[in-house]
Length: 384
Image 1 (cartoon, rainbow, N blue to C red):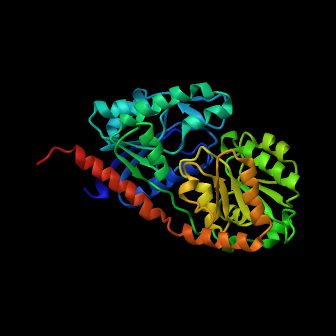
Image 2: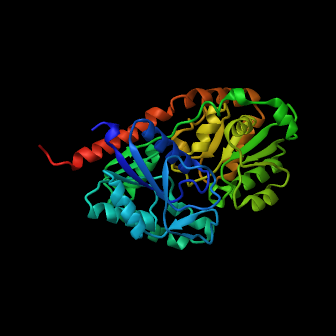
Protein backbone atom coordinates (compact mmCIF):
# COMPACT_ATOMS: atom_id res chain seq x y z
CA UNK A 1 0.00 0.00 0.00
CA UNK A 2 1.46 3.43 -0.92
CA UNK A 3 1.05 6.43 1.37
CA UNK A 4 -1.90 7.55 -0.75
CA UNK A 5 -3.83 4.61 0.72
CA UNK A 6 -3.40 5.78 4.31
CA UNK A 7 -6.45 7.03 6.20
CA UNK A 8 -5.18 8.17 9.59
CA UNK A 9 -7.35 9.19 12.55
CA UNK A 10 -5.03 11.13 14.86
CA UNK A 11 -6.09 11.62 18.49
CA UNK A 12 -4.18 14.40 20.24
CA UNK A 13 -4.46 15.72 23.77
CA UNK A 14 -3.71 19.26 22.65
CA UNK A 15 -3.19 19.63 18.90
CA UNK A 16 -3.07 23.41 18.63
CA UNK A 17 -4.25 24.90 21.93
CA UNK A 18 -0.67 25.73 22.91
CA UNK A 19 2.52 25.97 20.90
CA UNK A 20 5.04 23.41 22.14
CA UNK A 21 7.41 20.89 20.63
CA UNK A 22 4.90 18.03 20.61
CA UNK A 23 2.18 20.03 18.90
CA UNK A 24 4.53 21.46 16.32
CA UNK A 25 5.80 17.94 15.54
CA UNK A 26 2.26 16.57 15.14
CA UNK A 27 1.16 19.44 12.90
CA UNK A 28 4.28 19.07 10.77
CA UNK A 29 3.66 15.31 10.49
CA UNK A 30 0.08 15.87 9.33
CA UNK A 31 1.29 18.39 6.75
CA UNK A 32 3.82 15.89 5.42
CA UNK A 33 1.27 13.07 5.23
CA UNK A 34 -1.21 15.28 3.37
CA UNK A 35 1.49 16.20 0.86
CA UNK A 36 2.08 12.48 0.25
CA UNK A 37 -1.59 12.03 -0.61
CA UNK A 38 -2.72 10.44 2.67
CA UNK A 39 -6.05 11.31 4.29
CA UNK A 40 -5.76 12.55 7.90
CA UNK A 41 -8.44 13.59 10.36
CA UNK A 42 -7.40 15.03 13.74
CA UNK A 43 -9.44 14.70 16.95
CA UNK A 44 -8.44 16.94 19.85
CA UNK A 45 -9.75 19.27 22.55
CA UNK A 46 -10.09 22.80 21.21
CA UNK A 47 -10.46 26.35 22.53
CA UNK A 48 -11.72 29.59 21.08
CA UNK A 49 -8.26 31.14 21.23
CA UNK A 50 -5.72 28.50 20.12
CA UNK A 51 -1.99 29.08 20.07
CA UNK A 52 -1.71 28.26 16.38
CA UNK A 53 -3.83 27.37 13.36
CA UNK A 54 -4.30 23.59 12.96
CA UNK A 55 -2.86 21.71 10.02
CA UNK A 56 -5.55 19.58 8.33
CA UNK A 57 -9.11 18.82 9.41
CA UNK A 58 -9.65 19.17 13.16
CA UNK A 59 -12.64 17.71 15.04
CA UNK A 60 -13.24 18.99 18.58
CA UNK A 61 -13.24 16.34 21.31
CA UNK A 62 -15.29 16.67 24.49
CA UNK A 63 -12.92 18.02 27.14
CA UNK A 64 -12.55 19.48 30.61
CA UNK A 65 -10.28 22.25 31.97
CA UNK A 66 -7.24 21.22 34.00
CA UNK A 67 -7.14 23.25 37.25
CA UNK A 68 -3.34 23.17 37.64
CA UNK A 69 -2.70 23.86 33.95
CA UNK A 70 -5.22 26.38 32.57
CA UNK A 71 -3.33 26.40 29.25
CA UNK A 72 -4.40 22.78 28.56
CA UNK A 73 -7.64 20.80 28.42
CA UNK A 74 -8.25 17.11 29.16
CA UNK A 75 -10.07 15.01 26.55
CA UNK A 76 -12.94 13.40 28.46
CA UNK A 77 -13.96 10.66 26.03
CA UNK A 78 -15.68 9.89 22.75
CA UNK A 79 -19.37 10.70 22.38
CA UNK A 80 -21.89 9.69 19.70
CA UNK A 81 -20.85 12.63 17.49
CA UNK A 82 -17.23 11.46 17.44
CA UNK A 83 -18.16 7.81 16.86
CA UNK A 84 -20.31 8.84 13.89
CA UNK A 85 -17.51 10.98 12.48
CA UNK A 86 -15.02 8.13 12.84
CA UNK A 87 -17.35 5.69 11.12
CA UNK A 88 -17.80 8.08 8.19
CA UNK A 89 -14.07 8.73 7.89
CA UNK A 90 -13.36 4.98 8.07
CA UNK A 91 -9.67 5.09 9.05
CA UNK A 92 -7.33 2.19 8.34
CA UNK A 93 -5.06 3.21 11.23
CA UNK A 94 -5.52 5.13 14.46
CA UNK A 95 -2.69 7.24 15.92
CA UNK A 96 -2.92 8.26 19.59
CA UNK A 97 -0.53 10.79 21.08
CA UNK A 98 -1.62 11.19 24.72
CA UNK A 99 -2.61 8.63 27.37
CA UNK A 100 -5.66 10.65 28.43
CA UNK A 101 -9.29 9.53 28.63
CA UNK A 102 -9.86 10.43 24.98
CA UNK A 103 -6.87 8.33 23.96
CA UNK A 104 -8.04 5.32 26.00
CA UNK A 105 -11.52 5.52 24.47
CA UNK A 106 -10.04 5.88 20.99
CA UNK A 107 -8.05 2.66 21.46
CA UNK A 108 -11.20 0.89 22.65
CA UNK A 109 -13.03 2.06 19.51
CA UNK A 110 -10.18 0.88 17.30
CA UNK A 111 -10.07 -2.56 18.94
CA UNK A 112 -13.84 -2.95 18.50
CA UNK A 113 -13.61 -2.11 14.80
CA UNK A 114 -10.42 -4.01 13.96
CA UNK A 115 -8.33 -0.87 13.31
CA UNK A 116 -4.61 -1.07 14.20
CA UNK A 117 -3.23 1.49 16.64
CA UNK A 118 0.10 3.33 16.74
CA UNK A 119 0.96 5.56 19.70
CA UNK A 120 3.53 8.35 19.74
CA UNK A 121 5.19 9.22 23.05
CA UNK A 122 5.95 12.92 23.40
CA UNK A 123 6.82 13.43 27.03
CA UNK A 124 7.32 11.66 30.33
CA UNK A 125 4.01 12.59 31.90
CA UNK A 126 4.85 10.93 35.23
CA UNK A 127 7.80 13.30 35.70
CA UNK A 128 5.45 16.31 35.76
CA UNK A 129 3.69 15.27 38.96
CA UNK A 130 6.39 16.13 41.55
CA UNK A 131 6.47 19.72 40.25
CA UNK A 132 2.80 20.07 41.28
CA UNK A 133 3.25 18.32 44.66
CA UNK A 134 1.61 15.16 43.31
CA UNK A 135 4.64 12.88 43.41
CA UNK A 136 2.66 10.23 45.31
CA UNK A 137 0.70 9.61 42.08
CA UNK A 138 3.78 8.64 40.03
CA UNK A 139 3.34 4.83 40.43
CA UNK A 140 -0.31 5.09 39.39
CA UNK A 141 0.60 7.26 36.39
CA UNK A 142 3.19 4.72 35.24
CA UNK A 143 0.66 1.89 35.60
CA UNK A 144 -1.93 3.79 33.53
CA UNK A 145 0.61 4.50 30.82
CA UNK A 146 1.75 0.87 30.80
CA UNK A 147 -1.81 -0.32 30.19
CA UNK A 148 -2.31 2.36 27.51
CA UNK A 149 0.84 1.66 25.51
CA UNK A 150 0.58 -2.13 25.78
CA UNK A 151 -2.83 -1.96 24.07
CA UNK A 152 -1.17 -0.41 20.98
CA UNK A 153 0.34 -2.31 18.06
CA UNK A 154 3.44 -0.12 17.84
CA UNK A 155 5.01 2.86 19.58
CA UNK A 156 6.88 5.84 18.15
CA UNK A 157 9.32 7.62 20.46
CA UNK A 158 11.66 10.54 19.72
CA UNK A 159 14.94 9.19 21.11
CA UNK A 160 16.84 6.05 22.01
CA UNK A 161 16.80 7.10 25.66
CA UNK A 162 13.00 7.00 25.57
CA UNK A 163 13.12 3.53 24.00
CA UNK A 164 15.24 2.43 26.95
CA UNK A 165 12.83 4.00 29.47
CA UNK A 166 9.75 2.36 27.96
CA UNK A 167 11.38 -1.05 27.77
CA UNK A 168 12.56 -0.78 31.36
CA UNK A 169 9.00 0.09 32.41
CA UNK A 170 7.55 -2.75 30.28
CA UNK A 171 5.61 -0.44 27.98
CA UNK A 172 5.34 -2.04 24.54
CA UNK A 173 7.63 -4.27 22.51
CA UNK A 174 7.37 -2.83 18.97
CA UNK A 175 9.09 0.53 19.48
CA UNK A 176 10.48 2.68 16.66
CA UNK A 177 12.16 6.09 16.73
CA UNK A 178 10.34 9.12 15.37
CA UNK A 179 13.02 11.74 15.84
CA UNK A 180 12.60 15.49 15.34
CA UNK A 181 13.90 17.86 12.72
CA UNK A 182 14.74 21.53 12.75
CA UNK A 183 13.59 24.32 10.43
CA UNK A 184 16.75 25.82 8.97
CA UNK A 185 14.85 28.77 7.54
CA UNK A 186 14.33 29.85 11.17
CA UNK A 187 17.28 28.49 13.17
CA UNK A 188 20.81 29.34 12.03
CA UNK A 189 23.85 31.15 13.37
CA UNK A 190 23.27 33.62 10.53
CA UNK A 191 20.26 34.88 12.48
CA UNK A 192 22.51 36.44 15.13
CA UNK A 193 21.71 40.16 15.10
CA UNK A 194 23.97 42.34 17.25
CA UNK A 195 21.69 45.36 16.81
CA UNK A 196 18.79 43.34 18.24
CA UNK A 197 20.97 42.22 21.14
CA UNK A 198 21.87 45.82 21.91
CA UNK A 199 18.20 46.78 21.76
CA UNK A 200 17.56 44.25 24.53
CA UNK A 201 20.18 45.92 26.70
CA UNK A 202 23.10 43.57 26.00
CA UNK A 203 26.54 45.04 25.29
CA UNK A 204 28.67 43.49 22.58
CA UNK A 205 30.90 41.65 25.05
CA UNK A 206 28.11 40.54 27.45
CA UNK A 207 27.87 36.79 28.00
CA UNK A 208 24.19 35.94 27.53
CA UNK A 209 22.75 32.80 29.14
CA UNK A 210 19.50 31.81 27.48
CA UNK A 211 16.44 29.81 28.43
CA UNK A 212 14.18 28.60 25.59
CA UNK A 213 10.93 26.80 26.38
CA UNK A 214 7.44 27.18 27.68
CA UNK A 215 7.79 28.75 31.10
CA UNK A 216 6.37 25.97 33.26
CA UNK A 217 7.82 24.50 36.42
CA UNK A 218 8.49 21.04 34.93
CA UNK A 219 11.11 22.56 32.63
CA UNK A 220 13.48 22.83 35.60
CA UNK A 221 12.94 26.51 36.36
CA UNK A 222 14.04 26.01 39.98
CA UNK A 223 17.34 24.41 38.95
CA UNK A 224 17.93 27.15 36.37
CA UNK A 225 17.38 29.85 39.00
CA UNK A 226 19.57 28.10 41.56
CA UNK A 227 22.35 27.80 38.97
CA UNK A 228 22.15 31.53 38.28
CA UNK A 229 22.41 32.17 42.03
CA UNK A 230 25.55 30.03 42.11
CA UNK A 231 27.10 31.91 39.17
CA UNK A 232 26.42 35.19 40.94
CA UNK A 233 28.05 33.89 44.12
CA UNK A 234 31.12 32.98 42.06
CA UNK A 235 31.25 36.39 40.45
CA UNK A 236 30.78 35.03 36.90
CA UNK A 237 29.54 37.96 34.83
CA UNK A 238 26.52 37.24 32.64
CA UNK A 239 23.15 38.50 31.41
CA UNK A 240 19.93 36.49 31.12
CA UNK A 241 17.55 36.06 28.18
CA UNK A 242 14.31 34.08 28.54
CA UNK A 243 12.55 33.19 25.28
CA UNK A 244 9.05 31.84 25.78
CA UNK A 245 6.00 32.32 27.94
CA UNK A 246 3.79 30.29 30.25
CA UNK A 247 1.93 30.19 33.54
CA UNK A 248 5.10 30.30 35.68
CA UNK A 249 6.44 33.47 34.06
CA UNK A 250 5.74 35.71 37.07
CA UNK A 251 7.44 33.25 39.43
CA UNK A 252 10.46 32.93 37.11
CA UNK A 253 10.76 36.67 36.57
CA UNK A 254 10.69 37.40 40.29
CA UNK A 255 13.12 34.58 41.03
CA UNK A 256 15.68 35.63 38.41
CA UNK A 257 15.51 39.35 39.03
CA UNK A 258 17.36 41.16 36.25
CA UNK A 259 16.47 39.14 33.13
CA UNK A 260 15.13 40.01 29.68
CA UNK A 261 11.87 38.20 28.87
CA UNK A 262 10.91 38.26 25.20
CA UNK A 263 7.61 36.44 25.66
CA UNK A 264 6.38 34.03 23.03
CA UNK A 265 8.29 34.28 19.73
CA UNK A 266 7.79 32.57 16.39
CA UNK A 267 9.26 32.44 12.90
CA UNK A 268 12.21 34.70 12.16
CA UNK A 269 11.75 36.53 15.47
CA UNK A 270 12.26 33.25 17.33
CA UNK A 271 15.36 32.40 15.32
CA UNK A 272 16.85 35.83 16.00
CA UNK A 273 16.20 35.55 19.74
CA UNK A 274 17.77 32.09 20.03
CA UNK A 275 20.83 33.09 17.99
CA UNK A 276 21.35 36.02 20.38
CA UNK A 277 22.28 33.60 23.18
CA UNK A 278 25.88 32.67 23.94
CA UNK A 279 24.83 29.46 25.64
CA UNK A 280 21.51 27.87 26.51
CA UNK A 281 20.95 26.39 29.95
CA UNK A 282 18.20 23.74 29.87
CA UNK A 283 17.95 21.64 33.05
CA UNK A 284 14.62 19.97 32.24
CA UNK A 285 14.36 16.27 33.14
CA UNK A 286 10.92 15.77 31.54
CA UNK A 287 11.83 15.82 27.85
CA UNK A 288 11.25 12.92 25.49
CA UNK A 289 13.39 14.55 22.80
CA UNK A 290 14.48 18.10 23.62
CA UNK A 291 13.33 20.12 20.61
CA UNK A 292 14.67 23.36 22.06
CA UNK A 293 18.13 21.85 22.48
CA UNK A 294 18.20 21.03 18.77
CA UNK A 295 16.93 24.50 17.86
CA UNK A 296 19.66 26.14 19.91
CA UNK A 297 22.30 23.89 18.36
CA UNK A 298 21.08 24.76 14.84
CA UNK A 299 21.52 28.41 15.85
CA UNK A 300 25.17 27.83 16.72
CA UNK A 301 24.51 27.96 20.47
CA UNK A 302 26.13 25.35 22.74
CA UNK A 303 23.69 23.75 25.19
CA UNK A 304 24.17 22.89 28.85
CA UNK A 305 21.44 20.34 29.52
CA UNK A 306 20.36 17.62 31.90
CA UNK A 307 21.82 14.18 31.19
CA UNK A 308 18.29 12.81 30.92
CA UNK A 309 15.93 11.52 28.25
CA UNK A 310 15.89 13.77 25.23
CA UNK A 311 18.88 16.08 25.27
CA UNK A 312 21.36 13.31 26.10
CA UNK A 313 20.75 11.89 22.62
CA UNK A 314 21.28 15.28 20.94
CA UNK A 315 24.05 17.07 22.83
CA UNK A 316 27.50 15.51 22.45
CA UNK A 317 29.10 16.05 25.85
CA UNK A 318 32.29 18.09 25.67
CA UNK A 319 31.90 18.63 21.92
CA UNK A 320 28.67 20.54 21.26
CA UNK A 321 27.78 21.32 24.86
CA UNK A 322 27.68 19.71 28.27
CA UNK A 323 25.43 17.12 29.88
CA UNK A 324 25.02 17.48 33.62
CA UNK A 325 23.61 15.10 36.22
CA UNK A 326 19.99 16.19 36.82
CA UNK A 327 19.68 18.69 39.63
CA UNK A 328 23.44 19.16 40.15
CA UNK A 329 23.52 22.95 40.47
CA UNK A 330 27.28 23.16 41.06
CA UNK A 331 27.99 21.12 37.92
CA UNK A 332 25.61 23.26 35.85
CA UNK A 333 27.42 26.35 37.11
CA UNK A 334 30.80 24.79 36.26
CA UNK A 335 29.69 24.09 32.68
CA UNK A 336 28.19 27.52 32.08
CA UNK A 337 31.19 29.25 33.68
CA UNK A 338 33.56 27.36 31.36
CA UNK A 339 31.93 29.14 28.42
CA UNK A 340 31.73 32.53 30.14
CA UNK A 341 35.45 32.41 30.98
CA UNK A 342 36.62 30.87 27.68
CA UNK A 343 34.97 32.50 24.64
CA UNK A 344 37.04 30.37 22.24
CA UNK A 345 35.63 27.18 23.77
CA UNK A 346 32.11 28.57 23.59
CA UNK A 347 32.58 29.44 19.92
CA UNK A 348 34.05 26.01 19.09
CA UNK A 349 31.20 24.15 20.78
CA UNK A 350 28.68 26.41 19.04
CA UNK A 351 30.15 25.59 15.63
CA UNK A 352 30.07 21.87 16.46
CA UNK A 353 26.44 22.22 17.56
CA UNK A 354 25.38 23.73 14.27
CA UNK A 355 27.28 21.07 12.31
CA UNK A 356 25.75 18.17 14.24
CA UNK A 357 22.23 19.59 13.94
CA UNK A 358 22.32 19.15 10.16
CA UNK A 359 21.61 15.41 10.58
CA UNK A 360 17.99 16.17 11.54
CA UNK A 361 15.88 16.47 8.36
CA UNK A 362 12.09 16.69 8.80
CA UNK A 363 10.94 14.92 5.62
CA UNK A 364 13.21 11.92 6.20
CA UNK A 365 12.06 11.76 9.82
CA UNK A 366 8.34 11.96 9.00
CA UNK A 367 8.63 9.37 6.23
CA UNK A 368 9.78 6.95 8.94
CA UNK A 369 6.37 7.46 10.60
CA UNK A 370 4.54 6.74 7.34
CA UNK A 371 6.65 3.61 6.92
CA UNK A 372 5.66 2.47 10.42
CA UNK A 373 1.98 3.05 9.63
CA UNK A 374 2.26 0.95 6.46
CA UNK A 375 4.18 -1.82 8.22
CA UNK A 376 1.61 -2.08 11.00
CA UNK A 377 -1.30 -2.13 8.55
CA UNK A 378 0.34 -4.87 6.47
CA UNK A 379 1.02 -6.94 9.60
CA UNK A 380 -2.72 -6.90 10.39
CA UNK A 381 -3.83 -8.03 6.93
CA UNK A 382 -4.71 -11.70 6.33
CA UNK A 383 -1.89 -13.71 4.78
CA UNK A 384 -2.51 -14.69 1.15
